[in-house]
Amino acid sequence: MPIVRNKKIEVLYSAAEIAERNTELAEQIALGDLSNILVVSVLKGSFVFAADLMRAMYEAGLSPELEFISISSYGAGTEAGELVVLRDIESSVEGRDVLLIDDILESGKTMKFTRDLMMERGANKVAVVALLDKSMRRQTKISADYVGFECPDKFVVGYGMDAGHAFRELPFVGVVTGDA
View 1 (tube, rainbow, N blue to C red):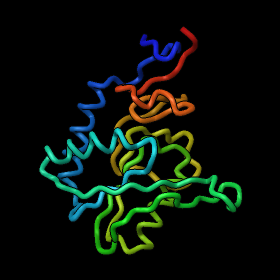
View 2 (view 1 turned 135 degrees about the vertical axis):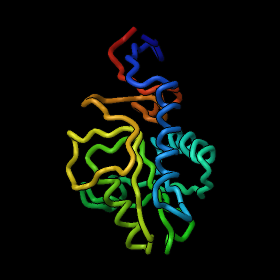
View 3 (view 1 turned 120 degrees about the vertical axis):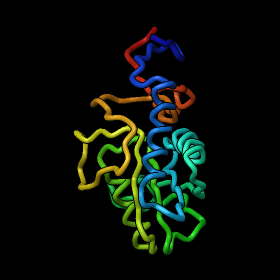
View 4 (view 1 turned 180 degrees about the vertical axis):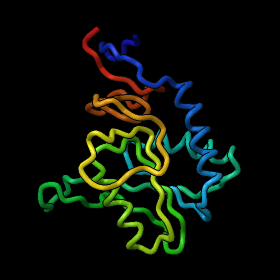
């Protein structure tokens, strides 16, 4: 069990398992019906997954463009739970197929908000890819078109996901189990 920052971390998905799954996801996406793809990575947690998946998509014969968006329910002057765009994409989505990438699909609120936003802006189609799917936590009707792994009902870190801004650098996904 790795020890990072004086914490024991149980590995759920190893770097090798993630790399293999990214290749499989990219191949599935390449076989799908998306064209003229604009990848939109939902910050912050998905940036590592998005980078690796984009490289795998290139290896699978795709060459999408990439944008980043940041969504929050904590924006100044918002109602509790209201989602707002903190950092928006710069490209037009009108007439394009958009692939939304997120680290973890949990409540579904952020992904539904972002998918609906892309459709309102004129996207031809919006598909969702999530590294982890925590379907038992879903609070809205949305599902991912492509899923890396089913996630147990545990707080996970690593591979871009953090706990208090720590552990994003880990090459695996794990659960902090206690002090070392």
